[in-house]
Image (tube, rainbow over all chains, first blue to last red; front, top):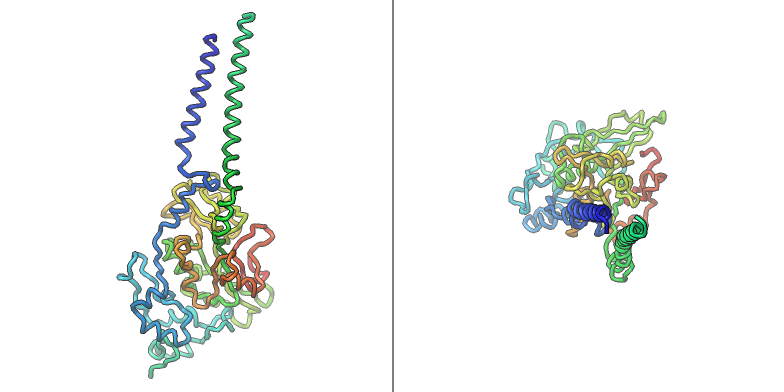
Length: 150
Length: 258
């Protein structure tokens, strides 16, 4: 074999090896296993801890409130709709829900008159006319809204 | 040169042909191996067992309270500024003169408020929006690096560690469901709360919805709430003319909705 052919072949092999080596290095592990993406990313997406624990978890300690709520019109609403977990809460509920202030603005989120809400099974009120100068929770128990306090 | 030169040239051609042939053979063998894998019975059976997640949205039930948008932000660490949403609610108000007003102050968090006086309104309704988890996802096609993909369960996900933040997917999405996360500096979007549904929980927005306007479930499971919802109601997807074949189905969708 002449020298020039040998050099050509050698450089060819070097380039091909370098290409394969760099390709191996650059393409992350598990890429292309399931498709044109990193299959391990599915596990990464699963890895987070849920903040919202669900009504059953709340009921495991607060059974009395759960029963009360289940008996009345707010039975469909999950605890965490009104008592969202704290953003820095982790797996346990130690630093969980802040107590909901019975502000009118809070109840108005669902119950203030809105043309887009009529006939949807959620009572619509002209709040200013309905409440007078009282707070909603002065008359209504938010867990059982038809148990009026006098 | 002479015969010697010819000999060398022949050797060179032979060697090159062998190399090129080998490379081509290798490149053919790899996809063949993958094909053989997907053809095998085990794998197809496994695929049938996997759920195919989807969501139903009942516009006739949504009251626009904004609990879903709020819960989504808490569950998924979405920045609190009123510009970043994985899900949000829009109030559509059709006026008597036919003009359509669409508004979504702070994505509906804190409750949507009527801004047009009753006498001017022809009709009004709330439309919750989120990623539609398309079967033919334009964002997946647009991604230049393979950082967004459709998971085996049909959920469109983002690979945070692989995204280069080029924003092509955000431009490609016809539903405006993606945004650039200012903290992680990568594309962010609804994942159907993938970490929750993998544990058997409901997505946060479905969990907190007070009127059950959102229905989540497995499209393969004939007994799931979602399949029953689809059987009972005439549903439609958003922008069906784009042929994205999305898996978020709306009941009571008016033609005004964009």
